[in-house]
Image 1 (cartoon, rainbow, N blue to C red):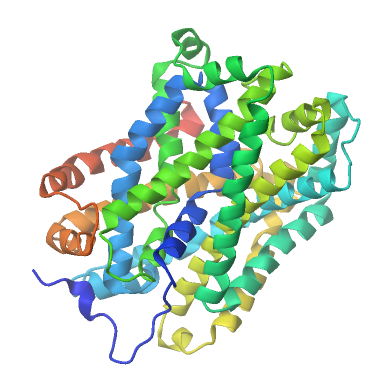
Image 2: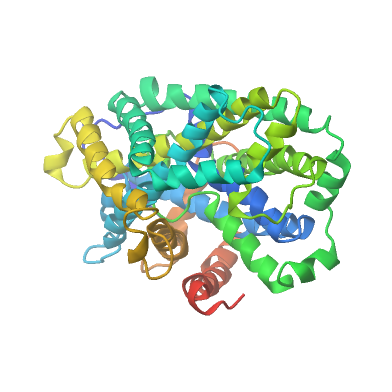
Amino acid sequence: MENQGEKTLAPGAKRERLGSRLGFILLSAGCAIGVGNVWKFPYLAGQNGGGLFVLFYFIFLIIMGIPVMTMEFSLGRASQKSPTAMYKALEKPGHKWHLHGYLALAGNYILLMFYTCVAGWILLYFFYFLIGKFDGVTDPTVIAGTFSEMLANPWLMFGFTAINIAIAVVVCMLKMEKGLERVTKIMMIALLALIIILIVNSFTLSGVGKGLEYYLVPNWDRVAKSGGFFSIIINAMNQAFFTLSLGIGSMAIFGSFINKDRALLGESVNIAILDTFVAISSGLIIFPAIFTFNIDPTAGPPLLFITLPQVFAHMPGGRIWGILFFLFMSFAALSTVLAVFQNIVSCTQDLNKTTQKIKKWKISLVSGIILLVLSIPCILGFNVWAFTSPIGDIQGIEDYIVSNILLPVGSFIFVLFCNHKIGWGSDNFLLEANTGKGLKVKKWMIFYFKWILPVILGIFIVISIINPFVKLV
């Protein structure tokens, strides 16, 4: 069957290209790697009993994450467009799949509305350790008070949020190869180097044995204390799914910037491995430290900003290790900010014939200004507007919209579109995904993609939407 994506570019049309396969892998991994890996994964592992959570995380990454990522890459590469124009190039006449493209653009905006705020916190804590703010501070109430003071200061949070957005605007103004690809390569290589340094240090601590046992060895006693077996499964499924940033077209956009030299299943596996390596490594860094200094491993979200500064305060050379750790965190967070902001720029460029004529630097600048304004509610939600939220802080509402609705629903749409005749169809998907060298999608996998994966995603969507209100698990 003819691959519909082959004829989507008009003669003479130009599409930015990534300079290398390594750039594509690091850029895609950079989009996936973020606070979800280095902050959320360790504290979820701690809250959910450690080893069993990690095991199920791996399982769901394989059966859900990698297939959906392969489909996103295929759609982007076949169409050579971002989601706002991708469906129009591939869908049958009269169909309305392209409406999801506009939802994907909105999802990228909503994600960065709160993500840039969290990235700002991390950058601020890097600065705090750099100037020695926590030197000699061992009182937990003082460290906790520092975090509370930050949340209460909207101007401080706005300033560091603006720094992250400004970096994204400047980098994305440049051509892909000279801007985003080059910067991401440097950050990701530095991030991986920092991981090795921090792991080596953690493995010298006295609590390394107990920490690794808690983190990696399944323990049924801890399962009962953490909320039960079903709760662990759902949380592991959630983390495996969201860690790869699937459902709002991020990977589809990066797929549109690559050539057809490599089959896409293998590329998805490589990116998933790199993403998982960072997540697992974060736990290898954190758990030996918290068991060395008798910190509660189930501390949850405060683990990063309240608990870990206590750990560094008690460590010899703690200031240096704090600087390196939050530099590592800043690179992880900023890599996602840069990648998702590029998605916004690409989607905006592809909106219509008018936006296609606007220079990239102008779209980047305007998008940055819009994002800065849209980030204000999240910032004020922790102080001035704290009383307005019906289900928690405004950041929590924005996170819920993206994580519990837009990402799983978007992935469900991608799966249906790629595997059913009413959409693009499995023949076209197979042809595109398997073009090039490397690991290929087998025909027997299509039955799973077509009939079983949508059911898993459907159940997951229902639980994700309802659970925050009725606490099913």
